[in-house]
Length: 112
Length: 112
Image (cartoon, rainbow over all chains, first blue to last red; front, side):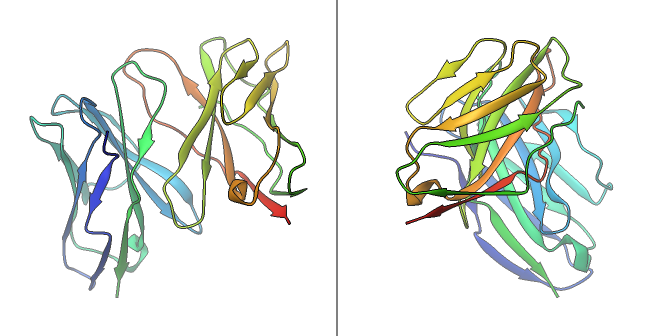
């Protein structure tokens, strides 16, 4: 089975721009979660989607949004980018009611 | 969320057992204890989880104290590939709550 894939792997943007990151979960997984990882704050939960609905949300501003499609693929969007949004964005998928989350390799975003 | 406390770093010699401790004195009865690890330049990887009883899998063993206020991840024979940051996480097992709350973790160095 293929693992979680994330595209693009690397991205450079400038302040004020917006960005969309994509995540394809493991086949059959309907839950997709997003995390932000920075050296200062560590790994922080952004949101989780299940069956196209946002089920949980972390403590991030409204500039961070996401969605999930009927095939469970998910995208997250960050609008009006700030320098502090530079981070590794990780996506994880799981079966519903499964304790295990499977992470992708992440998308490294650099905001200049 | 209940919090966990881990040492910032630990060292181990290659091919020796490693015991990674985690304190979680405010754990509730419905919290599972999860361990993930993150190798350099990769997303986190599931290692093991448990509720009350000790658990074994091909990667590691998890020893849970009788009062559940602490646990220990045991790598039976450390290899260079085990050098990573190890995260001990409490995950609420109730419905509709699937996020992982990561702490700082323990950075494990393996000495050849």
